[in-house]
Image 1 (cartoon, rainbow, N blue to C red):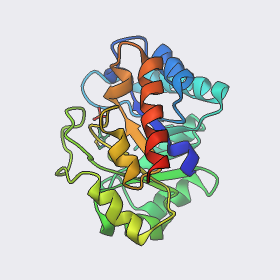
Image 2: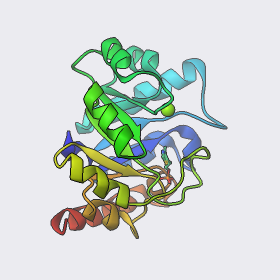
Image 3: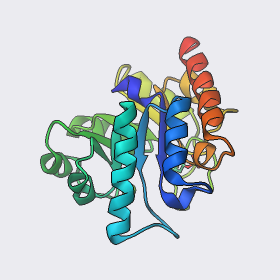
Image 4: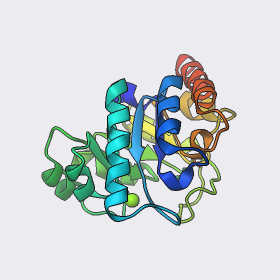
Length: 215
Ligand code: TZP
Ligand code: MG
């Protein structure tokens, strides 16, 4: 799992200025290692359109051999035969979601501190997403920013558990997140709103690789 977390793109059509499928394809060509379908917020697709876009995203992921994860919605994940689900603290009990998706699918859980991380790990998460690392305008209801220090705190307790940082991450600060102990970075706007998603992904990937070396 940890290798998949190196450069994790989270995205829905509402995040994109260009064709979402093309953005994803370019992002993967540039080095994205995991994708989360997060069709959420104003402008997001609903109903059958939401499912159809998800299928196209899944096909793109699988044609390049990267995992396709669905945000929040277990039913959608099962319908699309996704590789996993990602849930927040408010999206239900980890054990319950695990029993719905089975042991083969990946389960990611958002955590904001050591306590939430510990709980998610004990309850059976495959990885945790920790944030917001920095200020973000993409998600409105985030907890307070505490920065990469939270990754360090979690690493002290769980030296080997797969952890990805999220929130306000760009090529200018990705290094700080990874050198603090994260296996990688998760981004929305840094790739989905870049003029060139290939270059954006390549530049982020470089910072992640540099951060891993100096951790
Ligand atoms: N969870 C915590 S911050 C965030 C999510 C989904 C938004 C990340 O978006 P960006 O554009 O990478 O700051
Ligand atoms: Mg959620």
